[in-house]
Length: 442
Ligand code: GLC
Image (cartoon, rainbow, N blue to C red; front, side):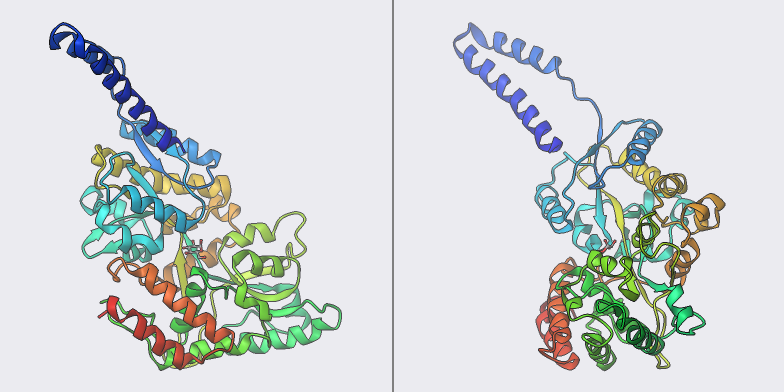
């Protein structure tokens, strides 16, 4: 890793200096050693540079933005490679940030780490104009605000969507995609029964049920959409109720009926594989799956659409889509805080996000860009993504759990997965989660 190599180089320089000093221990007087040391330091003057531990997979547009923003803020930005696995990435951050290392100025982090990383990140509020702040979807400002501090800015928009097969809805006489979970259950069952004759692999609805963060995402969407609480409320108080328990039971009933048994080990790519190969009527996934589903060789090319996630049936029911995506934060230990904050804005502002959208089809985290015709042409699902980000978005309880989100989510997805596999019911899961997270919530 470049960061380590650099550190190594700096250490090597210090080593040379030490050697010079030792060799000169017998030299005549201290002046000689000091002169050599001075000379050694003089040949390696510190050059201001901002180091960004950015995207795991660096694309040409990242290099383009880094070059432009470096020029704009007046300090070159160096892009450092980072672990692709989000847990490894967090582990790395939790090594150098608590050590107050000034090696890294800017970091990318998943929405769920806002509370955990907050003690080490600069409050960007004072660094932003009202206009700069106001350009981002409010859900990201909410997610990234820990207490009064705004600890990150979104680079993109990521939100749960319901994928559906347009051809199959038509074939089975459905006028449009489901608006409620009841409609989804009915349509999925009808289509599955009809398709099974020719295709034994076919299932009604695929999603993410594995024991991991993606299950927290799915389960919170069930709970919120049916009017239940999201583990904790905005004040950080425990908010698991009967509705939440009922939502988990309802999803568990899909397993083996309209969803494959294997959905309990599915992550995003497993669901996409099933849907894209033409083996599912509906899928919950992020926007990235859209472009891949439209690839030249995709069996479902031009045969699917996306819409908001279904809602429950009760009076409290609503459409609920969990938000995700990468944020940029500025280390409190940066030597160049103002420049780094300016760089964070430059790398995430409307101009940057428009470039990302046009270059790679990355959905923006900025509302106004969804009205841009070029963005609309590049991202066919732009209208649905914008609607979900603006109206149905739900944040995971990362900001108000005092840095304990990781543990809370871990407990939660383990217990939810046990509901899906039939080991316990929703009420048991809710009680067990409440018991285990008690130490971290009010
Ligand atoms: C996506 C989201 C991220 C979420 C993850 C869960 O990568 O952007 O926020 O935590 O999926 O699998």
